Image (cartoon, rainbow, N blue to C red; front, side):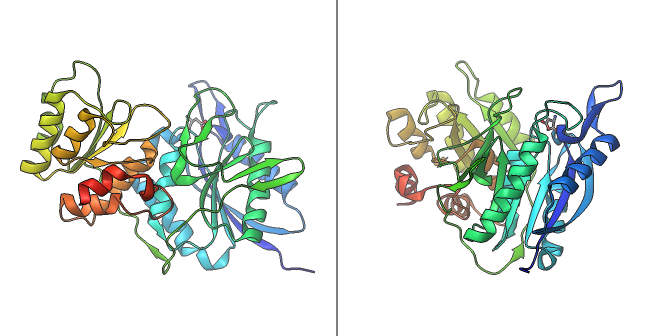
Length: 347
Ligand code: ASP
């Protein structure tokens, strides 16, 4: 008999185990018990598993210290398991997936996050299908040496750093941003479409994240004092959601230039549309941001850009350190070959 795969399952909460006991949906003991029963039904001859409950949170309540706690749980149990399956609320799942991707350097095993849009206690819940697909994907990933962090949802496996929540109600709640869906699950099996390019050195935990950052979404008429206000309040880095391929009004671009040059605060530019990413070279307004010293997030997801900034700020000593980190791909979160605007900034 071949050896069984060992999977550590970590429950953190979310709709998947939620029930409404009068005050609105929240993670529940009843949901937790139902999840355990579901796993018992799904676990077959090929798997041994343990299930631990790390927290019982709606994922809106998740903080960087929870990312750290989760990363530590995986890190300290690493040698005892072949794979890890995390049950998580969908609302901030993409942020946690990015955080785990960056925190677990040199990860050589699959880590899957899943959840559900409808509680496991509801008749038409998507929990059974998402849990089943997660296990199927883990098996295929171990077979095909697909390592790293993934979100498995609605028959898809999405690279963790490329996942985004796109729908607050529908079951097809996640998408892959500027990157192919890594695998598709169907009744006939798993189809793997791409093998992510990851930097895998020695296994280490780097789970510190700087919380003093701000994300500013531009809108026509936004006043530059907003930028001053967050920097004066202590922001050590900014992510600015610009328009299109990366444009902002002249007064905002000028203010960002001051912040970078006079205050040494790195400014990362992402964009409001979901797909396509940033190309600051394309328009004059984008080039003004390059001149201002802004850093292009290129084709990264917004979630990965924010979490990466939080992560690199714990080590970076200067704006140029942050710039160099954003031009480096650790988990296939960015395609540097597509980032002509980053090359320009560097050069
Ligand atoms: N509010 C829930 C959460 O993120 C939503 C979900 O899990 O679908 O925990």
